[in-house]
Image (cartoon, rainbow, N blue to C red; front, side, top):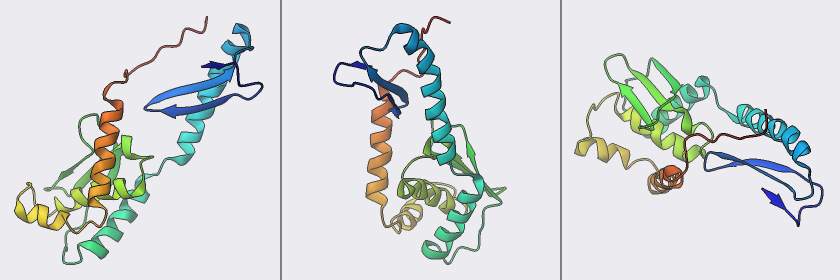
Length: 169
């Protein structure tokens, strides 16, 4: 995005899954073609540094079980990030594995913990019956987390999955 108000600075960030690059209007097309890959790389590097590893999920699981589900003896055998487009998370009760969508890696902690808490309950209760929802009510920021997740879905619903940049290469 070019701006006549912007004089020298260039800024890049992701909005609704799309990397936006803001630059002065006076930059030449040649300079723009050189800067775009640099700025994209900078955003991707910044995002990579912000990502949480599987060990963070396992630690969060232990905290949630201890504080909100102390009566549970069930423990996950693994908690890992996975690419998921349709779900926020999943749990296989038989082998006690939990998978969390990579889309949540940079989400606010309260939203990530809510999804993780939901999946932890599935270690004991496979379906979504009254007992399940009764336990889910224990999560202190349930409404806030649900609102975030609904807003996230609504925000990306109208954006394209892929964007191709024609930078003359």
